[in-house]
Length: 345
Image 1: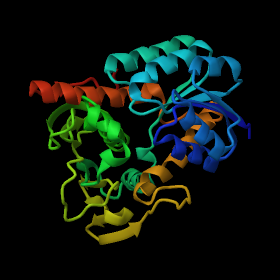
Image 2 (image 1 turned 180 degrees about the vertical axis):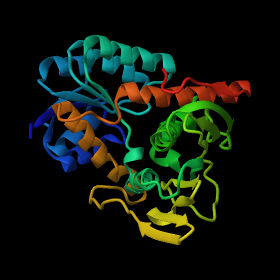
Image 3 (image 1 turned 45 degrees about the horizontal axis):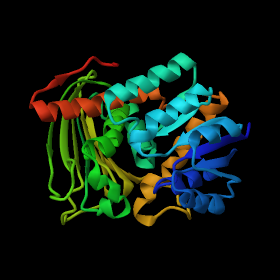
Image 4 (image 1 turned 90 degrees about the horizontal axis):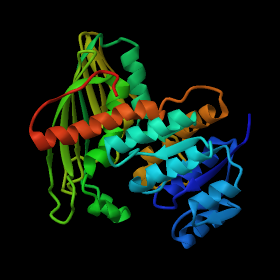
């Protein structure tokens, strides 16, 4: 297996866990890290034995010989960092959400396409062990043809404690969490033909929305309701960061319930099986489900960087998720249903 030499741009909250996931996946070495605040990059360099530290990403990419760059910077910097890498012919892995606007996301994809530079998005939600198990159950046909789905991630978890910058984002939960949940919905149910969305802001001291509900009709005939909230309120059952999913089909139903449990019900009865995430010593306990899913996501992306297989979460594919995110904002603002072309843009 070819050893990947990669560089990282960004040393924020998620960088430590992403570097840990690279180490867990194996077959790769981070040779350089860049961050505007040098001390933060130096801290991670010391922890992960990264030999080179930079504050200028262009300088880093000019000096270092790398097989790809992993962009873990703020979303508003993604386009510039992708442009720098593509200009040097370096394959790009970019953190979600891809861009702060659909127009910017389209520019980034077009730029890499024109430069013939592989462009991938680090979208790990669909790689969670229970979500993969649910997908397998649906593909197995035990519940027949799905006709309705509910995807729910509602929590009172104080998300702003670890990531205070989220308070200042004009577009919050749909861009941050919605990009995950809408991508998972595409993974499970296919592309959306139409959607409508309602949003709320419960926290009085944040700029963006912290509650959103999206209803979609997929090209497969499935009605999907995606509910998300970071209201930081008291809930009887709060399993942050677990996503609860119910799918109704013509022959039964399947539910991803609390504690990573898949409950499959048909006329023959109900079977119950747990699919907990793998255990790693480097994860934060409350984020374990999400952080553990970074390992199979990066493993998949690393195969693509090596040219061994196609990646699931290419930027071309993620552009469809970005279309859903910004169509949701359009619907919430206009109060109207937005109609999409399946498989676009």
